[in-house]
Length: 321
Length: 294
Image (spheres, rainbow over the protein chains, first blue to last red):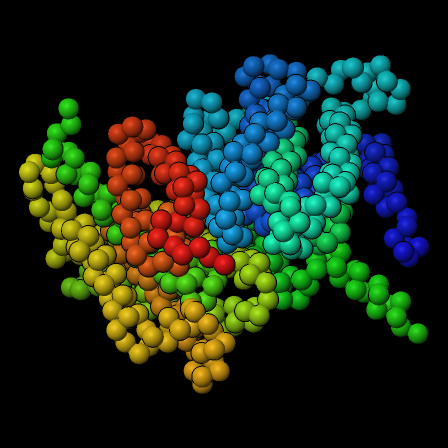
């Protein structure tokens, strides 16, 4: 392991982010919140993509469900944030388990089709079920969590509510990321990697491949739900777009852009894509076009993404005399 | 109790929807059967076909036969687009994992969808029915537009044409051989690369044809690409991916379930189709007609 790789980069980045409310502008906090939430979303996808080798084309469905569950509970039923947040994760996990049951039954090609198809039905529900989801208009004016208790804490009393919410996001997303990391490194995660490398062989040594894949799908959906819950509150509203296929494309491209081979790769990809989005949208309205071109360039030029490109650059650098 | 005329109307509207879907899904299934590539952009080709048809009618105006010219232009234009994409992009990814091909066609969905928005905007566009087929029949109290009947007849004709092409011609034999063993066919001296391009163009042609034919019945809007690809996926999942007759039967079932699902779940009849698909997946995971895929 090189000295570079031994530095706890994730911890350093997290510590730098914690200080953002005290030196950053309103916009810095806004950007940092979006990056942290979408980084969690991309990391949750990578449990499927990088660890288990399953390519989901409908991951936004679970993000959307999390967002809607949390927002509906908090807005329409005045449920406190911790309960709404937990329910969002459980709810999307439950739906992921139901859909995953069908998705993991057949080949990779079927998996690709079914994840997309099931995600579209989630979108259709969000879009049409006016009474509960607000239909096409979505739900706006979703309240922030009650953060008045921060008044009594030193250093925090003077912060704006958006800054306070950013700290909440940072703590919750950090905890989720640690959980995902531990899952990937656990014996269970090793089994998932074995399935990715060679499903036939994994089956042959007695592993119930489908059951493990379903477990991974459920967990990934659940963490996507946590990310969605945080995003809905950050956005102060939830909209059917959250579950639309283009959102699934975005998170998939984040993961591939960052590199699915490294644990933090997708988080890096999320940051890169969010920053790129804010640059691009001031120049052109055609963001999906840009996304598609990014994906094609990645496929043909850097199949390993940013993390892979950095890795190969580093090894080339080290090999040079 | 339901009126017989109402039932007949539902059956026929289900059949029309099924035949539109069959034209599109058969292209998807054919391409997969031979190239082993699942083309996510197939729905985008359908959308491009619809826009091309609209554009052609704008240029030609209301001259006689302009609709048929538009259909021809759209289908051939999309076939050309497909050929270009196969030659320039897809070809370079055949040796790699199937994930790469999937992601490429997925990127094309984003690019074509946004490209269409760039060229044609986001407002709904419509093409009127060809004057020859503008009337309608009245059967047992049900009203059936001539155009719908034309589609109901056209679907099986296309199916029979494809079947004859695959099973009664030399080219069809080559296509079936390529589906079974690409390397063996190449070793025997056949130009498999060209065959793949032609196959991809044929699949794109069907998508463009479907898109053009649907314009008098449904409005052309952004988002129609993803809507149709999800429906086509459901059809091939029900029928069995890569199976030609499976696609036909899958489309028929889809159309009827959609038409009658409306009676049970108004506004949400797509759920009935999903429920059916889930059922098929549990009973026969590879589809009703498929040999299990490797």
